[in-house]
Length: 404
Image (cartoon, rainbow, N blue to C red; front, side):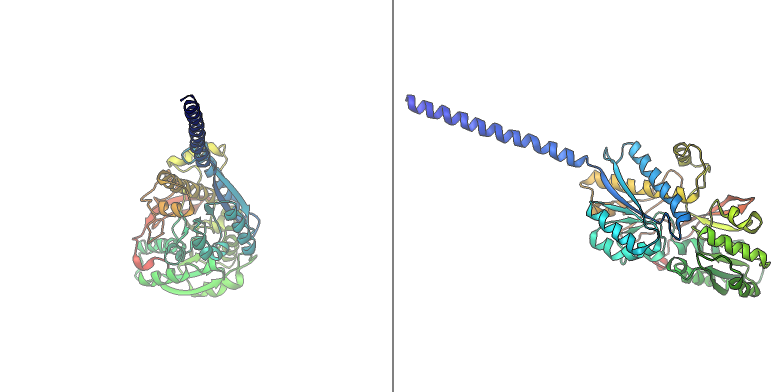
């Protein structure tokens, strides 16, 4: 009995030790899980800050950075901070692709992209890697999930922007004859993106499309390209480009006495246009935008002004800020349902319905079969060297326009 008692006691001690050891292991697992769950959420940034489009890329990048800081300062994503790796692509495709590979390899679940060249080159890779790209390349074909399932952006696509301005001009046309329209743009994927759709809609509304002109983003004079258009007498001329190339076009148009109403795409007009082109040359031009200008009376502007110490920023900055806010909203929704991955972020973004980025941009909605954020454009007019808000032009969400 004594021996049996000793063996039983020994076994009891051994079992107790094993149980305690097991319990100790179980206590570590929740801690490890919690540590993992509180790890930063990695996001990559691919923006041109020194290349051909850096004049607009740099303020956009600053808006992204401030937007991410605002999110982190206000609790991040359910307590998790966003770790933002912002890199300069210099508008170089190979450089951008290499940076993307490193970012995703390091665990980035999302990319904040920028220009058309890099964005276009990444479409298939994003889908394969299941990594959403919230870019600033607003080409319409990127809105069709059938061909670009992981591409998103927060501004109306280039084609919608052009159509919105054309609709505004037609609604305010008072002459009996058909209005004439021409298109000026660089021979580049970014410049070409909206042209077919804009021409088709212009003709649908009764415009006479009279001609085109190709003006490079690096042009220093556009007289040769504009003279043939001047002879065609367009009432309206679309300009696609960047602010520096637009300024060259406007100066050349003024020098040759070209009398038309210019309307300019989202990257071709900002607060610097009048400084670059001259106030007289820029006066009266219309600007398509997708975000409020600095100081505009909308709720989110107070936040931006506080975070920038009341130092004026360009509208490109505001769009970067809006893109960061929209990404964060998607991340929060994904985190509320489970692990944050590129795939869960995509699904979360596709649940957005009239998401309001603090009034800084038109309300945003994404659908599983339609990634157009909205059909709304803020129209501004250059008056006295400043961008004056005219109206928010809203178009119907036509199925035949998806991707075009």
